[in-house]
Image (cartoon, rainbow, N blue to C red; front, side, top):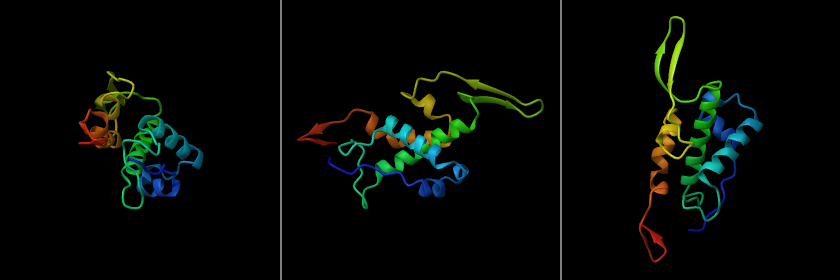
Length: 134
C-alpha cells in the first residue's frame, strides 16, 4: 500500500500529550526520530498513512513518542514498578526487558501499553493473497 510519510507536528503532539507540553522542539524531534526507528515511517510501510482519511501511522507514532517521553521523565529508572512505598520512598522495578521486541518494554507506561496493542496487527504474521494482507 503506497502512502505518505508522517511529518512531525510538535504543537499537535504537545496538545495531545500535555504532560510533555514543556518539552523543547529538539526533544520532541528526538522522540519522533526514535519512534520512527521503532515503528517505521516509509511511504510503503505496512502501517497505513494516507491523509486526511487514513492517519493510523501518525497516531501510532505519537503514542510511541509519548511512551518514550514518559520513560525519559522517570530519570533513568528502567523496568515496570512492581512495588512502591511512600515513607522513605522505595521503588522496586521488575527487569525482564527485551529491547522493545516484546510486551515488557512497552508496558512500562500507559502510552507504551496502548502502542503495543495498536501495533498488534503489524507485528504478527498475516495472510497475503494477491498482494493484500488479511
